[in-house]
Image (cartoon, rainbow, N blue to C red; front, side):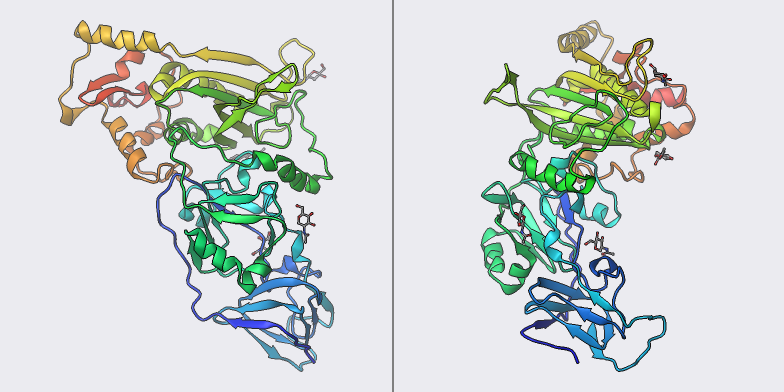
Length: 492
Ligand SMILES: *[C@@H]1O[C@H](CO)[C@@H](O)[C@H](O)[C@H]1NC(C)=O
Ligand SMILES: *[C@@H]1O[C@H](CO)[C@@H](O)[C@H](O)[C@H]1NC(C)=O
Ligand SMILES: *[C@@H]1O[C@H](CO)[C@@H](O)[C@H](O)[C@H]1NC(C)=O
Ligand SMILES: *[C@@H]1O[C@H](CO)[C@@H](O)[C@H](O)[C@H]1NC(C)=O
């Protein structure tokens, strides 16, 4: 006989799948664990209870459980505080059958403790640039601190799921742009505060922390800091719990430690200093389309974000942290090949900065490498190299002015700009979800068809022999076109 006491059973008639279509620079972060009845990992027997099982929820458990379908049960012990949220086709029916087809059953099946899930655990979040990308599982890679929602992010708890999350935090308030849960998107903090007083919210959120919905987006085109530095320890201890409280071994001897990451990595870090013209989304788009999407880099993961590097002098941290753009590159090579592809990509990014960095507002780039290979002739297993590239902006601008004066460059008539492809690229950047096509190789931009025309293998975009050939002056300014995509080259 099922024992039912004090439990709210809520019938949900109109579960609406929300589609959030607004375009924004911020990322979407989606919570992964759920407390759904049908999720086998929520049960101690790693299977959903069937008709002849005895179903147990600990009587002290506080939990909200979403039920998607209908279940026959013989016995169910439910918690004193809790709720079942029944989907449109869900329900519980009493069963007196001693056996059920396909159900061995007859066991005690207990719901696992839902208190174990921490907000600040980087493994429990997926990030994407749009809700479509979340749906298509096109997730972004980032350093551990930024896997957890950042201050300008939109947080999503997927519809048709229940959850319980411990929001204990080292900051007074966890700031978010918006938060969506069940069938509702909160954009006003007043509404969210009201919601947090509900019985359901008390089952969903627990711990020493509070969430504030700011509805504020990052207004700095050069990017915004994530804002999770104060919780770095918390994030890393949650993560390392799953690795026996220590960082996994890596093959390179001198692993790199990206800012905001918990453990050392083998691969490459490119650090950029930028000037006022720098736009993070635009530059990220460029690197993704120009380099990361090339088939040879299919196994490379890239994280690009603004970070604050603390200056330390004689071991004392200076209060003045200065912002830089950090690009972290990891590849999936193993053994002595570890990091080799990341290194190749880092070098190509540096070559690109040398030639075009100025057009993107990049003042200086620095590269750090740690790979599994022995440095030639040395005793090293790991390798660390520091190279600094300064961009010769005066040289380039001077060159353009000189060529212009000497008549080598003239204003092309607007409608037939040779830089047509760049114009489209720029327009896309401005109008479309700025980061809309990166992982989506279906992005229909003619300039990115180039690599498939068979020339890409032998063509070196950085040979530099014709750098100025790609510069056009239009009524709106000076544009730098990558010679690799100059249309005259394709037809030649
Ligand atoms: C089941 O729950 C686990 C942990 O909460 C989660 O990682 C997994 O994605 C869930 N699976 C499904 C199908 O919802
Ligand atoms: C929530 O997390 C904090 C640490 O982040 C921990 O001290 C506390 O015990 C947790 N609460 C529960 C109910 O597990
Ligand atoms: C690395 O990733 C690429 C692209 O996804 C894949 O083709 C390749 O097999 C992977 N290599 C290893 C060693 O996993
Ligand atoms: C690296 O160096 C060690 C000894 O210094 C040697 O045994 C090993 O074969 C080298 N590995 C490679 C990939 O060259």
